[in-house]
Length: 259
Image 1 (cartoon, rainbow, N blue to C red):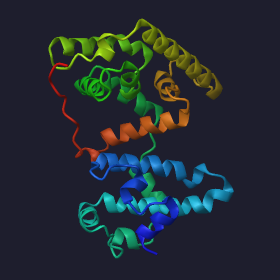
Image 2 (tube, rainbow, N blue to C red):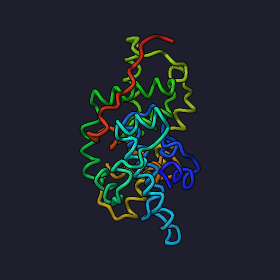
Image 3 (cartoon, rainbow, N blue to C red):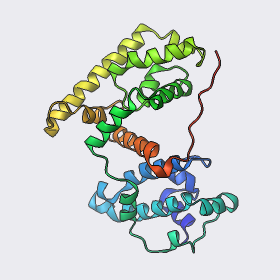
Image 4 (tube, rainbow, N blue to C red):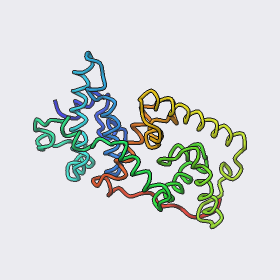
């Protein structure tokens, strides 16, 4: 059975991009991130014993899908002809896909996260990300705060000041959702942030962590109901953003103009 048939059987689609949950024009970084997200959900170590065999099969298929889409020549053939070269070494050979996955995704430690946060906050890169999030979500601060890496409730005034300055300079459009945001919405977001901080503190005690583990608090706090999904998304964002293999995918440029 060929790879496309295996995908159809295991994932309900023969579209390699849909298997990874990415668009057909996805950058290398997006494809890598999609592979990580989907493979985490079906990883054999994260399922029950009765599900392990099926999960292992899916995990292997995902490795092959990624190996095709991460290879420029194989991807071009697939895009143009809708076929996979089943004789390609990366598809045909009997590879240890678990080892392959571990080589791609180094385990991220608390120290890694803290170092990243220290360098990222206040950087020109964070500023660019804040402005892009503002454009992507048309000034909705709830979405902006959830989108920007490492952002917590106490960062909101700083992030808002950055955006207000950019609007004043006509670098960003003045979206009503931002400039006319109600105090009720702002207070609700503050209460949610305080609740998340309490949840993070409770988790810290549960894990027996020492005081001052701010990076881990940030990691485990739940901006969404599903903590595991939030953690995976954060780690994926870090890897997609800072892994050398995904640097070629360009970022969207910040648009100018007034609305």
